[in-house]
Length: 213
Image 1 (spheres, rainbow, N blue to C red):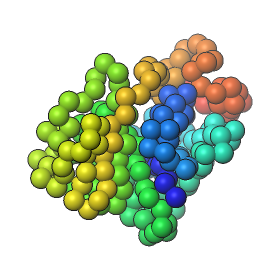
Image 2: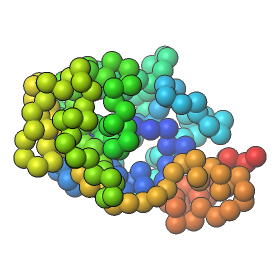
Image 3: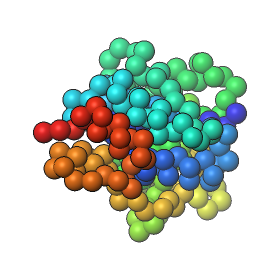
C-alpha cells in the first residue's frame, strides 16, 4: 500500500489540511492518507489548552466522509516529544510492506535541517512537499541540508531521489490561506469560522467551548 502520512497539531483541523492531503494523494497515487495528530509537538508549545483527545476527535470527525483518509493515535502511545523520526520508525516497523510518504509544506521542507535527527528520516519514508503557487522551490537539491545533499540526485522535473530509494516529490498546491492560529483568534473574538473548517468542526468547537478567551 502507498500510504501518505500527514502530521500536525490539528488545533483545529481545517479545510487547508484536508485539501493538502487530497492533493498529495492525487499527485502521488496514494491509497490512503493517515492523519497523525502530535501528542507533544517539539517545535512549538500547544496553544489553546486543547487536549490530544479533543484534537483527535476533531480529526476523526473531519475525515469521516472520505474512505481514503484514516486516523492514527500512534503519537499518543509514546512518551516524550512527538518527533517525526520516531513516528516514522514505529510505522516502518508496524507496516513493513507499506510504502510510506510523509506530507509536508514547503516551509517545513526548508527547515528540515533544524529537525531532530533529520538525516534519519530520508531512508524511512519518501517526502511529498506541497508548494505554494507563488513560492515554488527552485533548485531543490540546493535547498536540502548540506550534510545530506550528496545523498540525492535530481530526477525528472519535480522528483529528487535518495540513495536509499526513497524520493522527494514537489507538488504545486492550491493556495488556501487558512491557519489554525487564525481560526483560534477568530473564535476568541466571536467571529465566524464557517467555510474555513468543515461544519462538523465548527459545531464541535462551539459545543465544547474551545478557544474561548
